[in-house]
Image 1 (cartoon, rainbow, N blue to C red):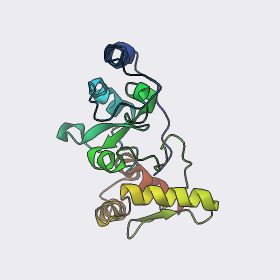
Image 2: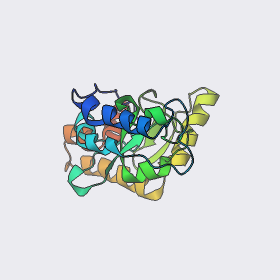
Image 3: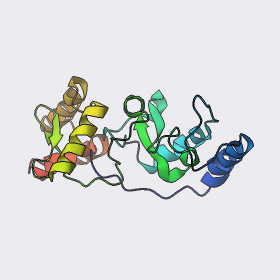
Length: 199
């Protein structure tokens, strides 16, 4: 993972998502500052801003740090603070993270995943040939542990993700990816290759 800079709320977001959502919660008598009641389903107005979220974050999954094509339907709105935890955050742009469907399904309502908006670059490191991801050994103990928990929770070091990152780097080495394309398609790999003096 790398730091993700929070992008401004689109000008039509309030009318398109927030106003409708808050009105819906009010009509259901759902308290904004409390968790959703168990088994409560609410209208998914956040889906109406998925195109905006995708454009704002250049199609890059906030957790996996790779570009995905919107046309294949793999994108989703992750609520960083889960809807089940705080109902009032269900329709807030600042609580949305662009996520591929795999990462969103793994994160779910867990609260032990680091926020891409708050992490620092360099907290996560890569072994580029194998694609392995690991915490920066120089991190303080508690931060090192939180990075490892995030890796474990999201399966960031599973075989498929390792292979993908290693393949991206190898395609760069084979001159099939130019540096700027690597930066677009796999920004974490690009950043680590740059840090290691391999670009």
